[in-house]
Image (cartoon, rainbow, N blue to C red):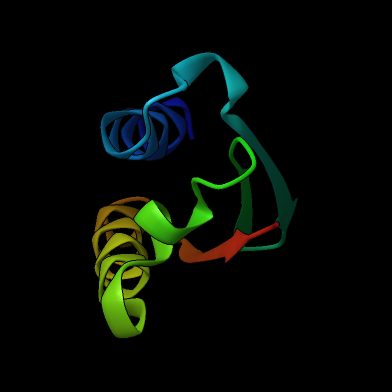
Length: 79
């Protein structure tokens, strides 16, 4: 779990300018993990990307990383 948390933390902080405003929480329910990502006002666009491509890529990387631990990983972006 720590590995997944540090991975999403690294990815999100590399995309934004105000790294101290990044907030990532998670909920575990059976084998499902949901990460909730919040960033500074006005920076959510950098995380979502054009047509949601960046957000989709982040979700894909996190799902792939969760396979090793047999976890289904979801990422929600909270504005």
